Image (cartoon, rainbow, N blue to C red; front, side):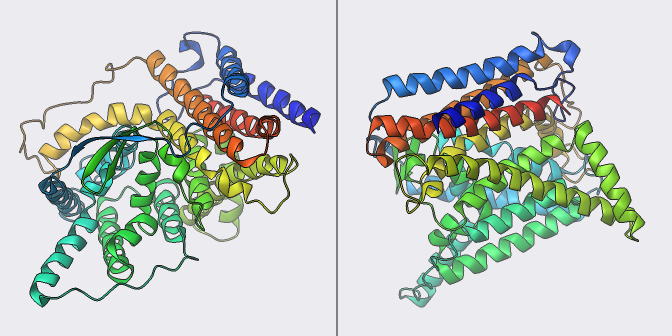
Length: 467
């Protein structure tokens, strides 16, 4: 069995070293601009993972992340949450109004850049560094809490208890919401329409308010709100945690070990990683050739070019998600052969190790987008409707594409991939020590997780360099 795992590792190492190096879909430099030969990146990334694995096996022989201690820093006044909620609601209103009433050119309207860049991408590193920031600013949560407070004062009695959240639902509502958002961004032909974004934002807010009214504000926020669950997963990597109104300093990565493997959790993580993977692949020549052929086949069947293109990209999105799921399931199948029966839910027990992988993919694929397109926030907030206003005096500002060099972008992207996968190895190794009866078996089981991590790293590097 070890021999088979070793063979898989060798194959993954070869794949990592063989990544091509053309341009990326998100501003990655071209082959000729790379600071060192491209093949060195692949080998270096794979070697770092192997060295990390060996170091963990030798030096990390007892779990240190499970039930790690936390130190209270200070209390957070209730007024802070009220202010944050008001800011979140105000931003939501501005974005929706901009989308509905403003210029319908996506680059001139605030809504597309705010939703796809500042919100969807920008909040990810903020959450990973400072904790669940979105929870404080969540506009529909703020409206629900304010409505419940007013209703309780008017009724002068406790409100009726919400319906118990069905355990079988788990995080599946969040999976559906996240997949729908990914489809809108990556497969819909009108995904950047300001008006459509505004309308869908209103629909989503109504759905969240209904869910909170039926199942309770916090239960629905924890499991049903796609964006609430999404950002909370990244927040679990942060060294800061809020408990009630107190802020605690915790050991980095330790909070994610407490992630409950509820129904839909793995599917959510597969959607997170798979959708980002497809976004990277969709700008590359290999996918371009496949997409053109598939679109041609669908169009010849009588479908319009637009519908054929949407179906083509929908298929690509789903295949990418299944590819990520299949690679993880392969690693879990290998772990099941090491000293344990198939009765243990190994897939669920090691699901938390995918969270830093998801973070790595987001940073690697969207870093340049955030750095460059994020600068557009200045003139877009100054003229949110795109009608020539200058509310903040920033309407004449432009995007500085010299803010960061191409080489620096490449280093950040590769470093994000490598560090994210090393963090995944650390989490998996720490969990293995609590899952298997001996250090030897725990280490042997992680040969398979090493294969998974090298596979994900290889895929990430290939996507970055094949745009």
